[in-house]
Length: 456
Image (tube, rainbow, N blue to C red):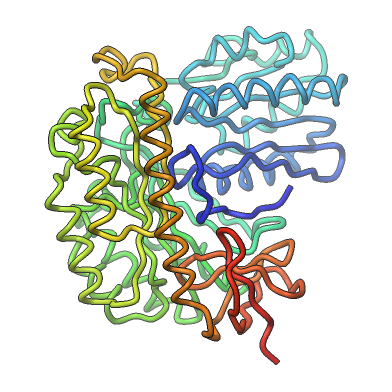
């Protein structure tokens, strides 16, 4: 499947939730990845461990729990995988498997469920490779209980396992984990229960990993995590995200493009602001975890920012980097949201001129406080989401119109798709080598993309 990250698509998912990706390896090993960029990175680690363990004829499903729809799609993929691979071992992992391990283990198609707490260890895949018949399953019982469910207490995890990977099959850019877990408890979010508390990757490990990827030919690096603006609070000296990025750019000057995954609007530190203003390797595109633009809704979500903070962060970013564009995750129809509250969100996005809106109707997650709040009717949620997507379509069109006639560097993906530094999608007139940066002459808009010719 294509690795294309459809950031200009107005999808019903948060920004980091990518389309499901299926990749086949040698010896009948397949991995199906749902969810975020962090899952993409972790799938690469798991695939490497599984191959090294000699795993054959197996399907690994790396699930996401951010919405009920993400879980539904994962279950659908598991059933399809069994139909298409009747003799294969099917192993399910990821956030949904961590949170709802027993329900996945109850699926007759599933051979084993592995939790997020141990899925990146080589040992677990060595054990999983032995799962050939019920007798062997019984022989690999361990401290996690029966071998069918190997899920521990994610809240007890305090570190991140170091992994050096050489690259990502069929991907134009490389994802690097710098942080995992989250210490916040937004009322709509179940992810902390699938990922645990916040923990950071040591600076040295990040530098080593990025250096290896850049040496391998990757022109664009994406730093990812669950809540990357919380980076460093658990490390000696408590370095900030900006301090880590500054050191990374200094120690690996060969980096051509650097991107960050979703940022909390009020947790962008001074070092990061300076890099945004001064270092051209920082891409002029920030994706903000806004969620809403009304103070009461934001308070009921237990977010750390208010409406005024959204205006201030956008104004500051534009004063430092006038050409910068923004993306935002937005929840439509959060519990108790009135028409007036929704209008406040709509107006904030319009006033701040957020280009790429990633809108999804509120999805109740059992076990979260928001699921117990008075719910907005489903048809109202959908209508509000539609209005926000229409606003987003207007903003995308205006952004693309401003690019017509320009010649810009773009990163080549698959199917003649490429991305500008702003992450706007360009449809090239010919396929260029995956991951190569080329100059493109932009000349016309076609739907949500701009057409371009590879410059001579």
